[in-house]
Image 1: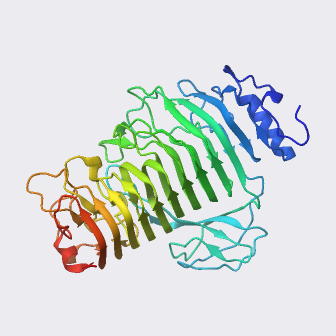
Image 2: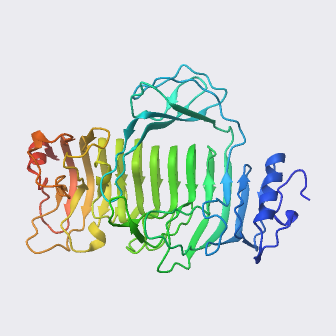
Image 3: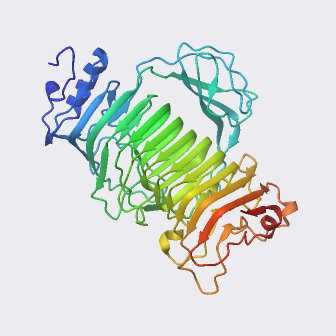
Length: 495
């Protein structure tokens, strides 16, 4: 068996590592022993561990070094497609905190937890994020995630007013980081058939432990056919804080379709990285191949996060479906065909980056295209629609003011463009230059639109755009918007 000082090995608990034998039970036993004794785990560098078909989740609570080991995941025949293979979990018990009310942007609480905690609060009496479109729904209970420090101070902007808190979870943040290194995982994709609705697969690595860093992990997807169902993220990170992915490699998933909530065909989102209810999420040096391949879904999606930073990454997209608050920063990155997507509030910053999306920044129409705050663009390059023929709209917005999303909607209050090159040379005949803003009325409507003043849920218009360097390679002068209300509302300052 393992030495008391560790690290322990999978082979000490019966793993074969030949790529044929089911090694998941031995891996499960090894981590159970490591967790109980506070020992690190190190796999055999030349091994190929087959993770079998069983619904068995190995809990990781200590440093783990997968180095160059291979792991095979065959999703063509499994017992339970929703059972994770690994869960990176804290061994600390949840704390009991009493909070009955909260104010937007509140900075402290009258509680004193024994450790810093990641907190989730909810008010199930109010619905927000009432989605519009082919995947329409009635919304989600109002909720927030944030960090409460030992002194009661709060990190992570609280988005809503809470006259009551119907649910609260407080998970302690471990004092020391947990690091997972290496590992080359290959998933043989599922071939599930289901014509209506989504059936997400989760044969994956779930991370719920705060202060976790994943370094150098590689995930490939092979064996995709003409049928299949989506994945909820091979790295599925949720309900925690201070997470870093560093030098990891991800794979885009083939796009499949289903019949959505509106009764019409819709493409299913399928992710290699999924991030939900995370405070302080960082990706550094993470990459993938073929970022302009439109047959593959955008590699990452997130919801309900606070403070996201991407640095030196190459990804097909970055997306915050149901909101990010605080800072949303993309620095030194390349984002491919699905581009940069957002809703939320705070400051969105793009610098030293190259983007290929149809818009430079797309504010998601299905959640009201709302961004309550400012946008900063510095020293970046935009190739609209991956260089295909198009009429570029730099800021993508669609919200006609006729749908209740559960909150007021905003276009960015102020935008600073401090060095942007736009390759708009592949344009249609009669092109007169790119627009800074799309027309928010340019979407599907149930009949003609009433005058703006009569719309029940109007989106707040932008106030100011400051341009300190914008070079459109077509030679055409940029225009404000095809929407006359935006033209009248926004002040453009050319410096």
